[in-house]
Length: 189
Ligand code: AMP
Image (cartoon, rainbow, N blue to C red; front, side, top):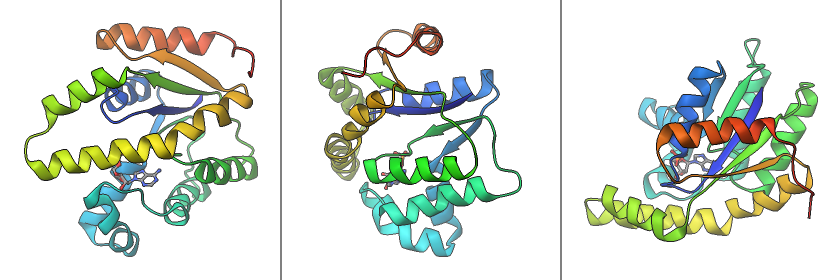
C-alpha cells in the first residue's frame, strides 16, 4: 500500500499517520520530521530549510523535492509507505509523480482528512500558547489554504482521492480511513 495523507494543521493528520504506518506496516515519510531533523543536525539541507521551518513558511519546492527523491533513490527505498506532509503544492505532486514513475511505484490512494474550519481554529487555539506560536500557526493555515488545497482536484482527477471526515474519536476516524481505502473513487467531477 502506498498512501499520501493530506490534512490541515490541526486536522489530526499526525495522529492518523502514526496509526496507519504502525498498523499497516508502512514506512512513515514525514517531510516535517525530516526537515526538522536536518535543521537540528545543521546539515546543508537543514541550513537552507531553517528560516522557512522556524517561521512556518513552506520550504522551496526544489529543496523538499530533492529530500523526497533522495529517499526513493536509496537502495533501501520503501516499497510500502505513507507520505505525511508531502506533497504540499501541485509542483511537488508533479515531482513526486515523476519520481514514483521512475521507480515503477504506483500510488494506492490519497486520503484527505477533512475538518471544519471552525473546529480547526478551536483546536489550534487550544494548542497555542505564546504569541509567536499563534502567528506561526496562522501562517501555516494560510499556506495550507493557498497551496495544499490545489492538491484536492489534482488527485481527484487521477481517481486517487478518498475524503474522510476527521471529526470524532481517533479510532472511529481510523476505521473510516480503512473503509475509504476499500471503496472505489467517486466520479472525477
Ligand atoms: P509539518 O510538521 O509537516 O507541519 O512541517 C513543518 C515545517 O516543515 C513546515 O511548516 C514547512 O516549513 C516545512 N515543510 C514540511 N513539509 C514540507 C513540504 N512538503 N513543502 C514545503 N515545506 C515543508
